[in-house]
Length: 471
Ligand SMILES: Cc1ncc(COP(=O)(O)O)c(C=O)c1O
Image (cartoon, rainbow, N blue to C red; front, side):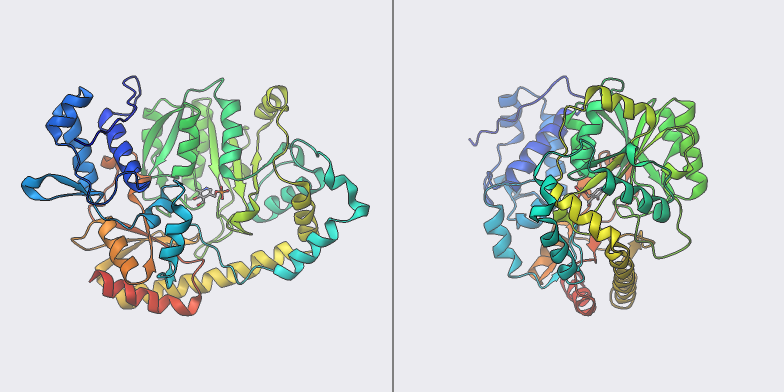
């Protein structure tokens, strides 16, 4: 019999069936369980792991419903032949086979609507390159030494001005700590928070990349359902948690924009419970409908909001720059306890970015991106309405660089993704973002469609290919 040896934590708040499900799913995604491998029977695994049959059965049912395994009648359960590279990218997993399997697949992908892409043609290569070369210069020796722990002041100054003008933030450069990406910033924040808080309320569905960081810092995650206008404040009160992570400008992944009335209620919640709000404003620059709504941080007068931003969408993911903006009390804690940590962003890159901003290239780039992404967004919505019409429902189309498609189909999410891929179209799953499956009111599969990376004139054809694949 195939041996499965998950490390199960009976003291964890995560149910055992979820731990088993996660373990087997990862083994499949990492190719350690090859397609066609027969899984142990429910009875055999329950006796091997000394767990109830019900626990094993529930884990298997979840894997079956998500298409990771299939049943061959009385012959038993077998690992499905899923093309795992597309799932892997979204599950934020990595393994040694990743590069080779991705490159094999990418040859087949003609239309890339997957998560995490940006427009690669629009990037101002020449101006960025010339500033970069200008910065690495003998007259600029300081960039070879250690810099300020929080980041170079002149860059932080530029960032605070930009955030004030474009996102309505009220912060001084002293409050900003530069980081090398959202997860690194959240990890630093977790080191500050975990002395005082043990749990974090989390949008459900929510950004798995943030959730993983909190889990790795041993926070208990309290999944809070969403309403049409964002996180449920009622459930937040009921959770008895005092810290919440939210994406108000463009909920990830469901896409709603939190209206000002709810933002004020959220701030009131934080005040009443003596709590904190972690505001992840990951793509707040791109809004297509209605008036811009200021970030929560700018509406807060009680030092309740921790603001987090990234350059991954607005400039490029590979620059690995994020910024954490702390209210005064947390800033003091950071300075007292964590000042030992050096600044992770290279000074050469910091200086380049500073000059890029100073010379107006940054503003110009953001303006161009807004126009470009608006055009792609319009083309996409138009193509979906015309080509997929009533077969799908569009979710979250007001802002950001992705939408969701609820697909009226008898196929599962992974089947839809595989069928799309077989037709040369890469799309991403959403089921990985839900913690509590009862929080989804969506009984049909929901597919993630990113539109930033694909060329505008490929969008129509890509959607036609999806129609051919799915209907
Ligand atoms: C909610 C959310 N926050 C942040 C990010 C970006 O993270 P990073 O700064 O690590 O690129 C993403 C990327 O998709 C995201 O979805």
